[in-house]
Image (cartoon, rainbow, N blue to C red; front, side, top):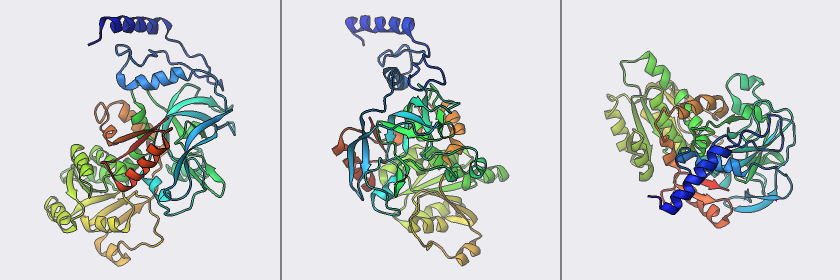
Length: 437
């Protein structure tokens, strides 16, 4: 209930919104003004707009001012394995005509962040801004920008892409000849990350997509990384092909690793036609969420029991495909053991091992296995997935929102450091962390 005093204020604000809802005040070519949305601008005006969109629109209105690259901003910075700080850094500037500057509304910690965080793989430069998952509002655009304008809410892939090179034209945007990953700088070469108040986006016309009004910031953030990675994993597992070619057989999939990507792979496999999806993990809370998403939960810690459950559920054959979302030798070996003869292993977990030990060429030959791995070309899938989320294909709200278990302030260094620890060690039911400026 709203008190009479608050109701009067509330109704006044509604009238003010309807009378003074501003139109866009900046043209597409404007480089320093934000377009205010033609909608209610108050976060507490429930009759004017869905509650899930209030924060985003209020943010866009509050940002309706000139962007100045002068001064500093807060950013999560990397200082070696398990050493994260919140630092003051120079605000980004437009460096090329194809750049835009995005004021970040939300960023998040990704499972692939854990590799450099834990000291695995390539050693990143110290002091760089970390992270590659984000959504926000454009506050400045370069002179060559054609499809975006100041004031647009946008979602971003985790890597930049030109849209014109051989690999971009062949649906492999993650291997763009001119592209790079956010938050990945080695020997001074690379792009600063997105766990910050602002981020510079090179090749923005072909890297960013607009976020529709009926898609929340959380949903847009998922569309930039973990949802397309889960979709890519299921697609490469040939779920759609098998479901169409053999409609009388119940296409089955086993998702190994129920972190954010694995959970999205469950939703993707079902959408692509899998009639039975098994979910394997060792963390009960993640298995509970997988079951809520419609999968059959199987505790991966008991290998023999996992094999027994899946054999019993597939007429003793094994699953048609295994969707591996961890990136470890042990989980690839488990995937190999779970698939039927002629089955497919689709691996999207980030690998850092220099040798392949999960199964031998002879074992692969004798089982007619198909093994696929690699980085997801997220930008290639984003338009389709943003449309599906906007059309509420999976329901409203998008069930993937449930993977966000923790939220911390960008400005709270202790909380940010704690979030990285919790995410790495899976403490306090930590599934995915939002970092909010």
